Image 1 (cartoon, helix red, strand yellow):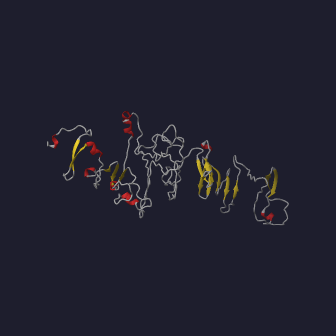
Image 2: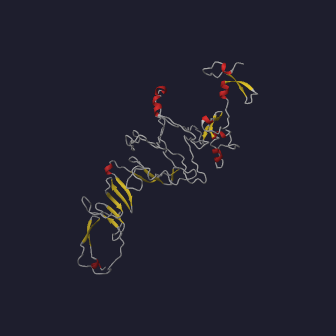
Image 3: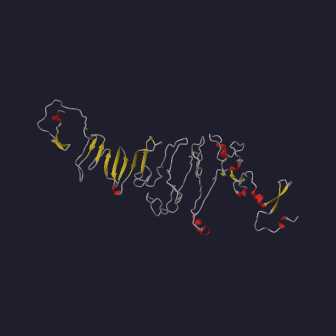
Length: 411
């Protein structure tokens, strides 16, 4: 038999070449084509190494690929197997069981605590490959589709383009667990534009998450139901949305600055749904809402919760109405609580371009009620009023109320 290295080297393999394959001990041999060998399912033991130059390798079972610690799973059609990978071993102690690996077409579990899967795509490559591809694609690191095509009704199948769980095991009390963290890394300085509800994406803008509806389809699609939904499964969230005190530019939560945590367009608002059931749907009716119909910024208002008060101002910060102590309530309606010698009450003062009138308009048949201790009951009415007369108008008729001093009224 000629020496192995005396043959001419083939430039390529067609799959019809016949190879001689021997068992590990060299006792048994067989002839096989290259295509037969390529189609044979590989079952190899884990190397125990991470880097290729130290013996690390990829292990797979036929049509299913298992990388790293995932290769410890025997790829059977049952969850009850004697040999488990570490993820299945953890899941086996839960009420659901180790379903992840059993249903996986391919899986990668880190054996060394490193990233289990890494993907990347560059826009520069998309641009340079435009001639080859015939178009410039979007550079997407990871793309996944969960397609709901089961038309049977009812059905138990649910489509998820992405599903993830963050587990915290007992005794873990130092570091948090995140189901997902998305980092927006801006290495290019300030963006060339400004993001607003009417122009959400600006040139150079860097965004943590963007939710779109329609997938770029031009026909045949309809509006999506909701952008973000919180449910209990079966546990609840203690807080729906939480902003860290330094998460929003403009303030750290303790200074005098301001940062916009939520920005919406005109007529977009917040609703509170009632638990009523109508037409078989619970919560379809709105019980309260908060929104704005302001067209011009200068005509808008601001609501501010201050220490011991509620302030309503215009966009220049000028007070229009308040429920708080107010030393100078000129041109404002002020509901003031008692503080020191000040009286609690409703205040209107005349000033430049102000109003001298305070109107109280009960419905027909209604009455204005004031409860106050009565003094000098049965005493004689003085001939003169020390404080003059208070002018009031009731139902279009002018009246005067005598203003008596405390001495005249008898204390």
